Length: 276
Image (cartoon, rainbow, N blue to C red; front, side, top):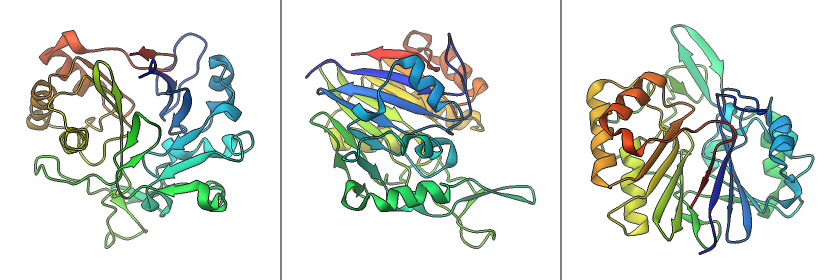
């Protein structure tokens, strides 16, 4: 196993000379490969790529956690500079139209037409991930995640069209898991499938009873205390040694989980790097 380095390219919070936006993107360097996980909203990607001194032509693979705009928006910039042989991994449902409803207001939150066209033109280099898929020797994608915990109810505000008759159950939500000498490292996009559902599934796929690190969006911003306590129990169950929530995790929810186990918490904003 070569050294694993995970760097936060895009996140809500800015640091140093990086910029922040409501979005998420990670750069993963392992197995002599460079993998990009999500692309952020797209407005700051070009700037942060330059600050990180990242050459997009050297990116070997791109994985999309799901089809929302704040994770796929940067594709439009990247399409101009990625190498033509790059492999892109996504669940087919990531290309579906996606809407959110707040009170009586509907908003399109899915992948843009230009970005959908780019992915479709990749032909065989677009690899659909309904099932667990290996990206490199030590990096794997979960594919579609089973929903087994009733406490992690699916959100009722996401839809596949401008009606309430076709809810989006977010089949495309997926995560990465990486084998390291210290143990399994989990990288989350938005965790729409549920935090416990995701970690339980990865533990099953990796055939492990412990998870060394969990980094990324947990979608716990609006979680109640019962769900947060349940999440804390999952961290304890798998003996997680490093927990770095960000993006959609919510400040208050993260503070609550921090109070449960402060020793495992790490910052996770643009410019942060984790080395294993």
